[in-house]
Image 1: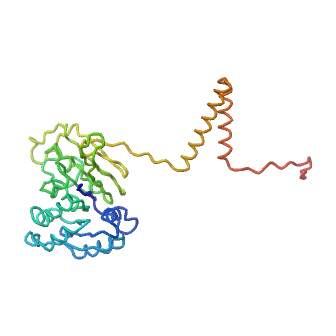
Image 2 (image 1 turned 90 degrees about the horizontal axis):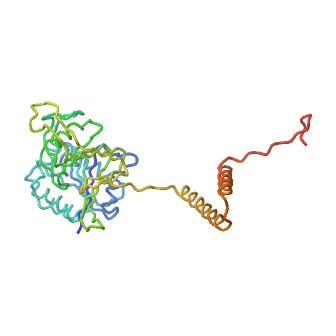
Length: 341
């Protein structure tokens, strides 16, 4: 069975108006057939957060929403909680303190059940802290800023749902470029992924039709952008920089991906976008194509000269210009004294 999608949400997703990101999660989980489990463990107000998402997901179409909220590693061994996750079609981890979340879940039966849900095809989503924990390496805490500096952040282990990566959230809004780049400079094999608020990076596993190999594709949706930092060929002095000194980071490949963009995580390359044509424009292009084909046949049949072709093209442009211009009333003819004829 193919692995399920990962939804990595940068936090502060719209809960009042369009709710695009949350609707995508409910739809991917099965709509009215969805069995959603919310994990509010990262939050200090778990019950309140659970109530919010319970109401939201039900309003968006889910009929079964439950919570799994272990308060300690001991509670994360509860078989009843594991059973809930084993039956889920969608798992949603809320925001809060990601170090608390990883400290309770990583290496426990509940944490293993989340990984197992992903591998059996369920959707695993997380916002803010719930986004960070999905990667192999997780930002534990740290300051913001545009310049990467030694020791400006700390890294902990994530659930490893997305291998060889590190995820940061609230990315543009809290100016976290520097701290993500610092981690990439220290570990250039990692792909740095920064997700803006009300934005989702959805990762799916697909088979390449040409090679038959599986690859991971990241698609962006929502209001903001996803920033990808590829340091696989970078030059850095992270191994020798002292204390809080600015880091050398040269040769980093940067991708800023707005909604609709697709990035191949396996090959580390941007994929061509799909061009959408307005139906009215498509109809007009088709009509123009017919006119040109008809003209080409006439020219071939009558051995018309280039001059004839130019006159035909001019008439065609004039005709189309007239079709697009608003109709005007015909001029009113008057006599010399101004009376209507």
